[in-house]
Amino acid sequence: MASLPSIVVGNTIKLDRQFKKHTPSSLSLENRNFNTKELVKALDPFHLDFRDALSLIQEGNTKVESSFYIPLLQECIEKNSVSDVQALHALVIKRGSYQDLFLMTFLVNVYAKCGTMESARKVFDNLPKRNVVTWTSLMSGYVHNSQPLLAITVFKEMLEFGGYPTNYTLGIVLNACSSLCDIELGKHIHGYIIKYGIEYDASIGNALCSFYSKCGSLDMALKSFCRTREKNVISWTAVISACGDNGHSAMGLDMFVEMLSEGVEPNEFTLTSVLSLCCIIQALGLGTQVHSLSIKLGYGTQIPVTNSVMYLYLKSGCISEAKKLFDGMNTISLVTWNAMIAGHAQMMDLGQDGLSIPKSV
Image (cartoon, helix red, strand yellow):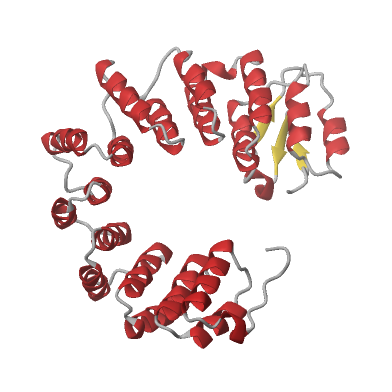
């Protein structure tokens, strides 16, 4: 993390551009007699990590902007540290920043990302006012923590309170319906979408395609895809996966070819899905072409892509090609090891090939 070089102008600590990536642009000070020059001199040689920043906030004569908490809370998500979130939450309340709706909504999201939905709900319930972002954050948290039924409950509460969902909100709700395999509820949501004329939006069409696919209704998934006006790479990836998930691998590969003809560039997830379809029908020729395309697009070293290519070689009986790919990998996941072991066992060649497995695995 960058150090804290700063220039004192009118009792305000201004941070350099690099540090702005992690903290707000300035930190207002309540006490005009506070010696900011001494603070700058003291902090300049050091890196301001989470604990330093926390100590800075705890200074009794320092007024902190609400935005200062955001990168610190983001760090809590990355560390999955509930105790640090709670420490910051206490400071937010102490300093009166709990009145900032944006900050408190972000706090709901942080608790959810750290897996403590009870705390997220408490923060939400204590908010004096809420907006659609706040409601959606709570719904998303429940879906993220495998509690889709509660996400649906929150959605119903939002409607009862007169809230209007955004396209993103409806996508979250459809995701919850998918997790519950509740096609009837999803159809009600679809009806709501049609009523407000947003069925043709890409984000909505993508969500509907995935929802119907997971509920086993490929026909409706295809219809949702076709009705989407401006199809993006997510749209194509969703319909390709839908075909594969519902036993129509060849159709999924046809969709991939059509996608390329439309000039849409695949991403890592598209390529992984297509390679999986190649494995299912053992289309080695097409799979090697997709592998070449992956390398050309810069995804050749991505673990999911490499694993899919290696598994295709193994399924097609090309053990030597699979091992060559395996030996060239910089990072080997447990999935990779399992695929290699299963492939060798399948070909009754484990002992002859001499695959060495480290003791650490």
